[in-house]
Image (cartoon, rainbow over all chains, first blue to last red):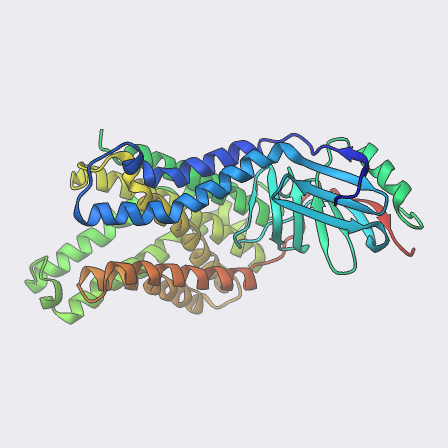
Length: 176
Length: 247
């Protein structure tokens, strides 16, 4: 059972959803012959149906991601900071484990991950910070990084000052 | 209008946006190297129409070799044709480095790497436009609707990075007083990238193998790139520490 939140913060607004829509459109493109009822024969038919079989799960996943974005929240419970994005992800960071909180710019690496301008989810490899568990409406610039001894988390609260003020109240031996 | 045109436009715009942002980020969020990208744009058309095409036709005519012979083509001519792209494309991509304005931006191996990345990205984007024009002009694919060319989009998108990588390596090694090694590394990588397609065209490998060969080589390029690329500090740092435990 999820622990009750004392306060909840929304992420900063961004156009990450638009990039996600564009990505979905790109993935749907190869499936258009099927969707438009274009008559297919022989190797063309095989190729298109194989493409559909591969792309359909990807489209479903991207659609679920898109529909989950409005549910992105940063909650301060009694014992932990919880980053969540609907049913997709939930990171629970106990206050006792937090060693560093900073706002910084990150450099994405070449490796594939769920990161688009204005959106970053799950584990994203960054060239400078290493693997960061993201739940943010920013990909690189102005990301708030919360670090424990073993992991880093990225978020992007809309009201950063209020979030930091609330978080500081919960952290042990606050220093800055 | 040829049916490939909309997809060619999408490919060029997407490639420019993606790899332009990539270059901007990796150069420490500086516009200095992004300004070099346009220099590479016309070079693919230039080398194809002005060098590779005439050379292939001229040497073939001089040797009395007909086109379209496939595996019956003399081996030396096949090798000659295969090497045209790696050799002349890698050479023309670094040609803008002779310009004073470009040389001023290459004061160190790090800068040379980034300048090469920019010139190669420009070449790749121009190549996508040129190939789109070639495919459209040939009329061979007019039976396909514009959205059937997603293979073109996917391939060109990643090849733009490959061109950037190869030219970056060339200029990086050249700035380190090893221009021959740089050229051989770039041309060698280019040859490996093209090998699968060449074997497929000769009927020596199935189409899927050519695609797989390209993917594997690109992954190799990405691995090497991540290993050798310079770590450039951001032009303007913006970091605020809110909390640090224990101090």
